[in-house]
Length: 400
Image 1 (cartoon, rainbow, N blue to C red):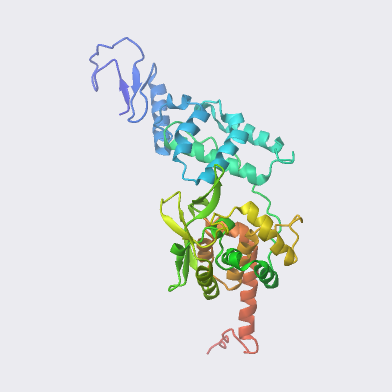
Image 2 (image 1 turned 180 degrees about the horizontal axis):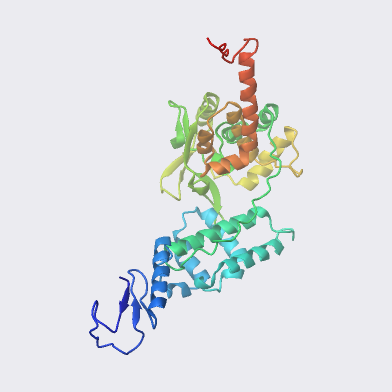
């Protein structure tokens, strides 16, 4: 039994050396601190609560660990073990500095409670953005919410806090997604045709393989399997500490996607005409022979690329970069997904091709396109059965 009588030997009325001194009833549970009480009923109540907490995983935890400052825990324990790329870590540090540390930074971890989280949510609703001075976007608030939740989750696993402060707190609002602009085939052809031959493959791999812009800059010979018609997406070009470097793709979403025949032939022709440039990767320390570099053999800077090549190309195709609508190279990635959906490609395969960690992300972004595909499938079945008479089984007559 977890409740012990300190004044008498177990099962007897024989007095111990501690008889008459201190609190009589002691509660001992493996993994939880010992505690003593004057009344047996109080000890039994505490014993029941401790056992319930042990079942929930709320104990054991060291209360001394919880006195560490939030900022110190993040800097010493959470950030060094975060699996993000250098670019994503830079973004996370910026969000911590601007939106999380001002509210939580100087608090001890065990002071962070659901009421503290609710106070932070209220402050975020009234906070203004440094860019433009308007209200913070829902996407920024949600991203900070995710970081904050991950910090508290790790602290709970590490035994720094007993319970996650998000328990009983409503999740922040999801970002309201605007209307996604889908390019017509003619517009995509116009963009591709407007690119000079040397850089034609950059938008081509986005439109036919789903590369993000930074990933399209990082296509290497080592990624290409012409025989099996596959292309691996292993890297992206990013600015790290003011330098262009080859790093893992967003959220480490290394993946293999089908390589269309037309794209494979175009990339093979590019290699034959322009050759490749050897670049050592920051993550694997291996040399990759990149297809797309500047004429001086340097990695492509997205700002210069957009100004010199992308904006003129979309303008030639009839799009206006100055308009409020999305006009970035990501449009070609959306086009790629829309083509797959219209071809009734398995949603799980689409998720893997675009490098989304969760299917929910794919459905959040492209769910309305799947609805259109369902309608097309229904019309296809209607066409298949058109003019074929009765399709339901004939009901047999009574008594037959």
